[in-house]
Image 1 (tube, one colour):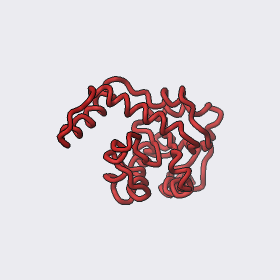
Image 2 (image 1 turned 30 degrees about the horizontal axis):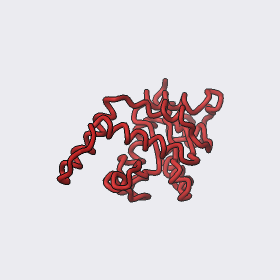
Image 3 (image 1 turned 120 degrees about the vertical axis):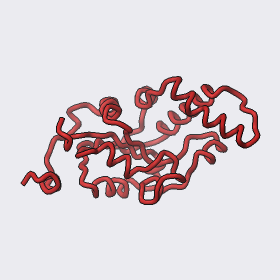
Amino acid sequence: MHPKKERTFVAVKHDGVQRALVGEIIKRIEGTGLKIVALKMFVPDMDKTVKHYGKDDAWCEKVGQRTVDSLVKDGKTPEKSALLYGKDVLTQLYKYFTFGPVVGMVIEGNSAVGIVKKLVGGTEPTTSDVGTIRGDLTLDSYELANVDGRAVRNLIHCSDKSEEAEREIEIWWKSEELIDYTSIQEKILYDMI
């Protein structure tokens, strides 16, 4: 595949939809020169959401260990194993992602995965860089989410790697839903005139 045809999956989560930030997020993505090749609003079902996250016990253990470390740091005794805390986090992610409508997109262009990750920022909004979607448009934190017993509200999902993007796109889109076209912007960016 030619680098300018790299694709990534993006979902504006229900908190972004409810806060009317879909247009702002699309504007930031399109402003880079990347293009949308598929776009739809839907409420994610649980089966596809479980496939989408695709997390195993090792992931749960790693994430749960952060909770254990945080409790110990605060002088508290963990009530369960890191694995169980991690599974709780995963359950919260499923609940959060399936709660309401999301706007899903397939984005295409040179280094689409990396460019979108850079635009979106880190998973935790309070530690995301200024200028990123999460850093500029929301203020939630892991600490607050842990206190409230919920997933962090971070507006948007984006794929971490090309392989992950391909897997996620196949979960949410049929191949015929992806539009192959050339934009005027591409002709300028990629010297296709």
